Image (cartoon, rainbow, N blue to C red; front, side, top):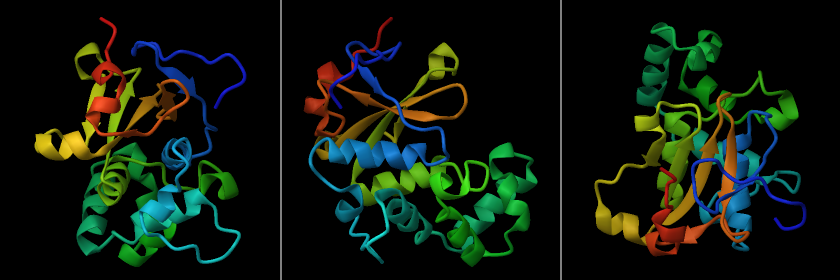
Length: 201
């Protein structure tokens, strides 16, 4: 991640922005890059096997998430669509959980950003659970009192202390970039995150 001068994250002290393509796969690419910064494969850590030698990390991570879709998850997505939430418009053509699983596997880089499912709460929390990962999300466009989100939540403090962490920078266009400190983006345990991620006031 070295080389060219890095853009700084506007809300976090000493945090560099690792820009990623706006292709619909940005969340998955953030996770893959974070693990790669520590010399690891996120999909290997998730025990998601490679089905063929042409599969990349994003495809494997998408499949990892899609395998957790059951009829209950499908019903939740259907309710969100019926409520008129724009992020779930893709549900109008999906009749069942199997179709949703297939749709979640579609890569934006391969099929186009409008033909894939962008990561929302289910996808982010599911992958974080599988990896025992906590995402510290900084939403640049949110109101000041709701800019910072922890996924999954802070209920189990002991679990939080031993989990791995990533910093995700969410832009106004629902796009994720990765946060880095000293070229590192994956932190083992909360004590490794720079000063607990000091937020600029």
